[in-house]
Length: 214
Image (cartoon, rainbow, N blue to C red; front, side, top):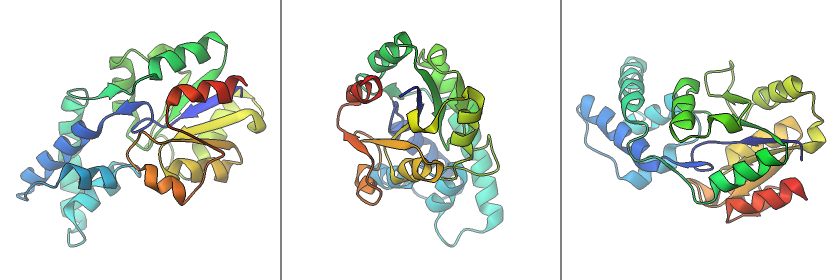
């Protein structure tokens, strides 16, 4: 593979606790009780607006969701690196791929500014030629616009591009763009990979290196 496109949350970084803390801080702001962290984790993957809509429940008004989302973004901006860490093996994998001359990018549904802050804060900025977030385009994953843009920017063949992610959203994104997909089971929603079986499934993200390099 010549181009490797990574999801962020649940794939490269373990951000579960920071997201759960931010969601429950938002619920407290909205005068609601906390949710179990496992419940919050199940809501992650489709972007902050849907995360907050789910966290507030089906009875929340559009005005309430907008107000809560604004608070959530502000809170998470200040606390996105309190507990967030790289998954084991991520830095080594990225170093190997970078050393082998592979082009790498991040395509996440997390807002792009916060994504950049986290990537830079964890010392990964030099590995990626591009970071695209959920607000980089009019459509989020699983729409293929992010992948299509990265292919156009690099001029690389889609047959030699790989999407790596932890959820069905990532696999659907790859399918919609006509590229290969690798699922990792360490993330937030590994059970969803049964809905959208990837071309490869790995328990250790270091195994992605063997897929990419052959």
